[in-house]
Image (cartoon, rainbow, N blue to C red):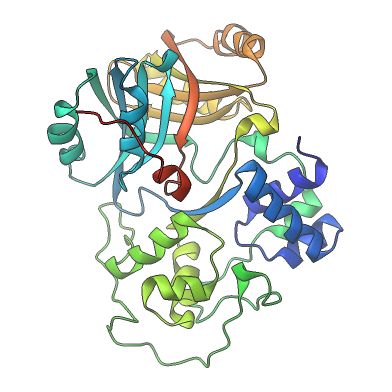
Length: 371
């Protein structure tokens, strides 16, 4: 069971996933060593993980929600196979174990990960139906996470923890806390003139259709490393990219200041009291869609609200304390909104992969063969 300090550490990491333990300790009124011990215990016992993620629109990606109806005998093996793919996130077993939900990330202009939908999936035995829904607009989710994770700290404590907004051109990040906190190892190299395009100082890619710069190709190794561990030290990120620590720090500062990268906290919602989860597929009158979605984005029971293509045009994820609370939410709050014509509720049984890279221990799990 999580105590108040555990919840405080989790909330602090939600505000700034790379906050030094010393800054978290100062906000919580405990020692740096206490925060470090709690963080290690939460990682080991509660599966806590900080991950760095690319904001899909700014990264030039389209998100597709994929629903696979399967036979019970093949569901788990198929789900783990999908979870191992680098272009998937949020792989879930839903609807009594006969459906898999996942999000596929495809570059703008690609109809849907062609390899996934047109080649791989049709060849899998046990799949009885496939549907793909393009995300058109996110009202809640991504950087604006479920509010249940962010209820432990006062306004003053939150203000202490918010990262300073640095300009994208800042040569180095703000002074770091003690080097024993691996996520904030300081970088003290002298400032240099703007480098030419080299392996250690990559050029930027052209702007996306929305006018924002997508991450340069050379930044993608950095993003991949952050998806595995958002609190990796600059030394670890330098080893993953082949850059110097100063270059890593400069690029990470640039990506964060532009909103291209944000940090999320992964932890089982059941540990925070949300033992019942469900995906809500809604068909909403187009004239009411924006109003309904904006209203739902303010509901504390929801972690995701997104407009999609398909016979249903609005998707939400509910997290409730128990089935009775979910029923109350569906009938009293959701049911009170005008414009929702149909609602399909799909209970979530298990999340195999969240937003970050698949946990290495899970990735090594042996699976039964799926033709």
